[in-house]
Image (cartoon, one colour):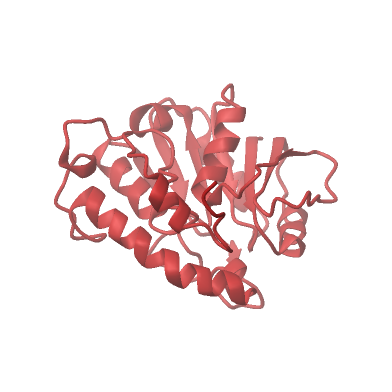
Length: 244
């Protein structure tokens, strides 16, 4: 059984329904993070909803789902635009079961059929070792690189699995959330380089060329994040609220 399935969703709830229809493993708690902030619902009666007043982003949505279910031994998160093949979830559940060391399972970054962090499973030991996602990489991108960096430095067992998981729509791999909406596409073109700059600031170089072995090169734990309210405001998709 998957103890908790967390799905942050900002759009394409039709694909979210497709994802839910592909589930062939029992789910203890199904948590939908409604980043659309418009009261969207799904047909699955098991769904519980986290409804922020402003979208939490992908890493922030994952964090919210974890923090709302702290009793779980491990958590599974997924993007709306994937669907699982027969037996994929059973394989991942078996990989995560009876594990008492820090571990994370996700897609292989070198396999173009499935973007890494389109799904992931991590246990409580992993969170204890390196912390939650850094939601300063808002609303998405470089959060996966950052978490992998921390996991590698924190001796978390990083397991890659693609199986028959499909990502995208009609064989078109990539974020359907961005591809399906011109406003999201334009917003992402603005926030992607901001997150890239934040990654360089945090680790001293782009992914694969990092210098620091602790966040910002400081004597801090791997779980450390630096609040940046101006940066958060600059990364809001849509029209940022004016100052009061």
